Length: 167
Image (cartoon, rainbow, N blue to C red; front, side):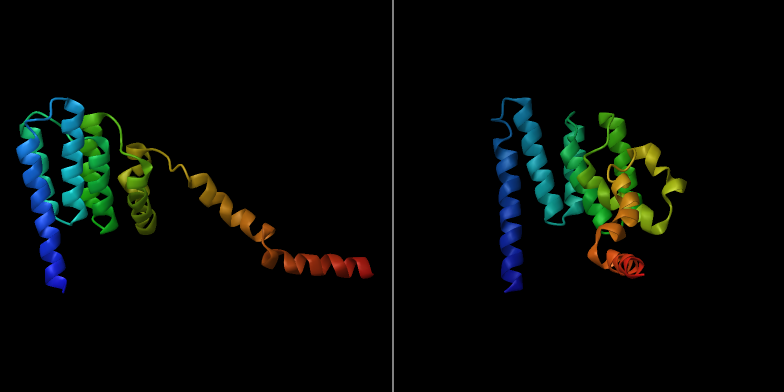
């Protein structure tokens, strides 16, 4: 059963790539070419064919085009989700060189999480590279405010207040 599913996925993947290579000539607008590049690239990354995706990226760059930000974001999040921090950081630096900006925060959150967990944020300079964490204020304030507003955190405080009123 598993082999049958694997062959079906491979068949659809090859079918999509062959469709792209045949009909790419028919695409007149550059926006459609970039969009179709993104679809094929994300198809390869989503099916865990990273070496094929990188070959496809080199092929695109040899033709004079570049990957767009969502394509970079998909491979960065794929590498970060598998704990490959070095590869993810190299791709972030390459994306900054090519586009002048970093991909969206959704693709960078795993990179931030790995750096926080390993406590290497200052060594890498992650704040300089990709900017401040937009949810950082929430994570810092959550520790302080969560206890005060929850019922479990307030149960002893209310008990102390009630004993003061009884005296």
